[in-house]
Image (cartoon, rainbow, N blue to C red; front, top):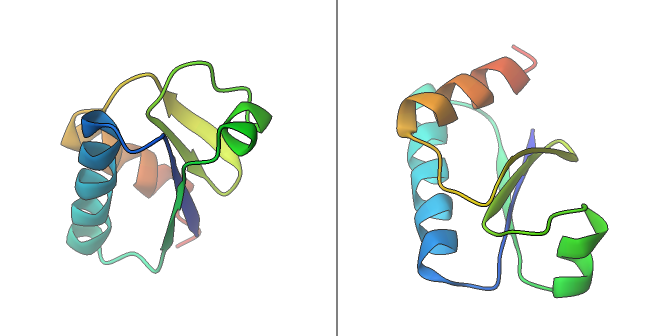
Amino acid sequence: MIIKVLGPGCTNCKNLERVTKDAIAELGLDATIEKVEDYGQIMGYGVMSTPALVIDEKVVVSGRVPQPSELRDLLTSASPN
């Protein structure tokens, strides 16, 4: 599973990256996290508001940091296991 955190490095972007790492560790998922800060790449996903979360090239959250329980649900749903 490849997870991308889209955002320029603002506080919410850093929070999304942190809670995503925590959720992956808690769920024991085999995932790679990439940070995308380039505006051109972010716009390529059609994201108009950051932070955004992309799981296996699908935008699942945009413009907010999801609650930990919602994030765990998103990751579990996307997991191939």
